[in-house]
Amino acid sequence: MKPFKQFIILLSLALFSIPLFSQMSSVVTRPEDILKKKFKTFIILNEKTGFVMAKDPVKYEVGGEMPLCYFTIDNPTNIVFPGSSRFMVIHDLVAAQQGDAYDWVLENNPEEKDVFFSRTRFINIDTGKWWNVLVNDEEVIFQNMATGAFLTIDPSGDYKTVANRKEASLWKLIYIY
Image (tube, rainbow, N blue to C red; front, side):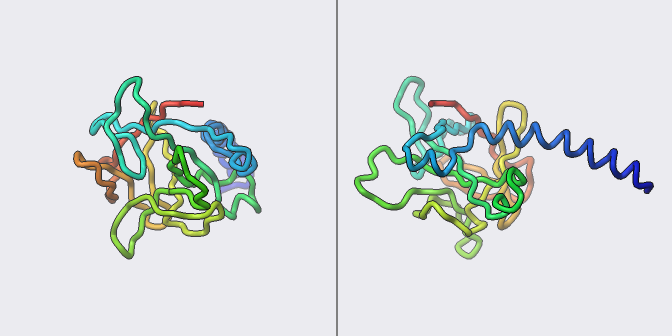
């Protein structure tokens, strides 16, 4: 392929990917905001099952107090290439942490063959806790970085992963700032 054609293809890919990342970066809580307790929170709802994502999923109740989540980007590649990754960590915002130094994040643990919220600190190098947020119209799909599997939730509220994107759960972000 000629260098000019390669340049045009790279330029068009860059122009396409920049808006997608900037759209997702608007829902990310920055580390300095965490220290100030200013979270970009939202409810993550699976309309098919009616469950809201949380350490212990609950059924969605309109007007009720629902569990809140927030995203962070702890991927070290962002230090070298800022804005280069859409892999995010999904946190469950616990209302009363009572001095607890940990927070809860969604983890895909291939050794245990299980998906669950685990305790962690803010700096995280475990790829099982990084999720690629794939936008699908008004809903999102979560793909794990470590395994490439997609997140789903069953009718009883258990998190699982599936290999096929078509079987993944569609989640809706409901913003609560």
